[in-house]
Amino acid sequence: MPKPNMLLHNVSLKPYNTFGINVNALLFMEIDNNTTLEEVLYSKQYPDPLIIGGGSNILFTKDVERLVIHLNTKGIEILSKTPNHAKVKVQAGEVWHDFVCWAIAHDLGGIENLSLIPGNVGTAPIQNIGAYGVELKDVFVSCQALDLKENRQVTFKKEDCSFGYRDSVFKRNKGRYIITSVILKLTTKDHYKNISYGAIQSKLREKGINDPSIQQISNAVISIRQSKLPDPKILGNGGSFFKNPVVSMNQFRDLQEQYPDMPHYSFGENQIKIPAGWLIEQCGYKGKRFQEVGVHKNQALVLVNYGNAKGEQLWELAQKIQKSVQNKFNIYIEPEVNIY
Ligand SMILES: Cc1cc2nc3c(=O)[nH]c(=O)nc-3n(C[C@H](O)[C@H](O)[C@H](O)COP(=O)(O)OP(=O)(O)OC[C@H]3O[C@@H](n4cnc5c(N)ncnc54)[C@H](O)[C@@H]3O)c2cc1C
Image (cartoon, rainbow, N blue to C red; front, side, top):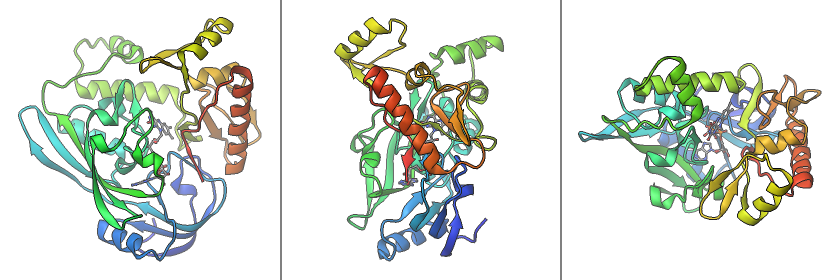
């Protein structure tokens, strides 16, 4: 572990990204407090700094010729409690899954379906993390951020964030807002338990559980995720590489004539979401390996590094997949992963 709050030169980012790509940061700082973070960012001494959290949504395709800040600020505080809810403030550098475990241990509900999502709490609002029928926005109250354009602190309430599917105001203004803490509203009793997903229901049935606790839902989610997704510690990956595309009802009807088995979900009023994994699988990529890179055998949305891949090789594969999907279905699949 590098010493916190010290400027280092030429640091390998391999331990800081879940793809395990070995690129160097020209300058690197691990920051563990908000005062230092403000000083460094407001000084404007380092143009266009890159903030990283868990590095689970980043693909590095080359060395980073600027300052990389690994945000490691810690702290969880219960701000208020009513008979039904608690407001909890969490510092950006807390690991998301550790926070989920903390919440469950304190019998605070609402994020158990988001168990085991890699990354940090401060990054969770950026793509409005979601899984198994729950999104961050469902429990989000507000967050504090540093606005690097105006050099000031700003508070974003939920309505300011324009949360969407893997989307937010922060994603659309990349590099401008650095989130320093997040406030969430969690349930203290009468937890609303979302077990609508078939996979969760089957897992609970398997265990003979009818009325699950939030801990049991979390256990079910962890077990499903571990059986479906590769562990980045064993096989480098960034989770879903692409977002599921959304098409118009008209385009979907045309596609359905050609591909009657195409899986789909309604999205908003007149739109349809199609699983990108299915599209990629139809193009023949599932389980395919190309030297050091490939497409995971169980989940075609996940691109993997077999050990010594370069970021450009993964990005080339991603672009090849994009082209194949475009040619076969006339659908553009947008990367969910941030490419640098
Ligand atoms: C195996 C696996 C499974 C996954 N499953 C899911 C899933 O089920 N659902 C889901 O939604 N996502 C999933 N993801 C994606 C990922 O976990 C989330 O996007 C997560 O929120 C990324 O957090 P991070 O801290 O690792 O972000 P990083 O990769 O460190 O950063 C992502 C982006 O945010 C910026 N950034 C980082 N910290 C800050 C900050 N404090 N303020 C402003 N900008 C910042 C970075 O510069 C970068 O552009 C998965 C990833 C993996 C590897």
